[in-house]
Image: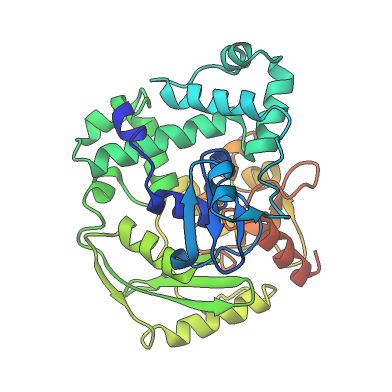
Length: 351
């Protein structure tokens, strides 16, 4: 399995990381933009250039030798405090068969546990435990796509127990492991991407209703990613057939105070996720709840982390308003489609 994770990085991989603004790839490569003459790191907040306008380099020195200059926004030549330690920690987590403890990783990179945890989250945007979970999920996904059985994927990816694997499959993949392995075989989906006031919006629907609403920056990348997830589904890129639904979704993005109760939905998840998603739709526009309050609303006080995971798995943004949930201190915490969009949606609601 480690051989799958450590395969050479292709330019397509690098472009995907650039589109995702994947900060953990900051030191892996630089991208030169021919139309502007600058080079950037992954994670740069600037708008992602078109694929055909990019040259990829292993180092900033190579980019400068090719005539590019450093971006003034992401400042790719500036070293970040603790960058080397965090990079070492990421490689350690990625190489381990099971997730190492916080204390172990901190000791290896020579930092106190408290300082390491704070530095890692500030640099990576997630905690070390969450990063380890992402690594484990990617291993499972790669194993299934590579032909492994579900049982093999459970133990090769480090889950340790089938129940945890099935929970992660619903949470991360949006379907059962067997359905993921089959690439959505048996599913009938229509999908399209359209511009909206928050960038691009992908809308997918089954015969029963809208199954996905996703926000992003690059329409082609969003469609390609969706097609990869449902490679074996009966999938149609349907602009005309979804026109009315897309107009309605764009209207809800422009005015998220509208609950959109008339929009038919076909969203799938665990029983707990469904309860959380239903509870989210009861939060009045202009108000925010904490994850603890959300968990209590479904009769699970103390399950704040599980409520947060269910929010992260929400397949239909805005209509199921997970952007209305914040940290206990009022911070925006995370948002699958970017905290800047979360902040803007809350501003539009007057929260």
